[in-house]
Length: 75
Image (cartoon, rainbow, N blue to C red; front, top):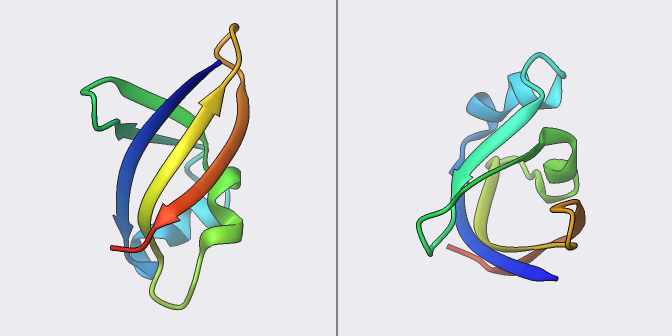
């Protein structure tokens, strides 16, 4: 398994198309420079009135399938 760390700062207004399902994928750059793409639905539990903010850790299996996504810090 691999772990990737990244930061997000998405306002509630910016996240709305993701929440509504209009935009299906989130694309981020991990701290190591790699580009990651994952279903936007995985961020729903992290949405607040301010949007989605924080430092995150994504764990993927050997086939690059998402195993877990956790907030590890608040920015």
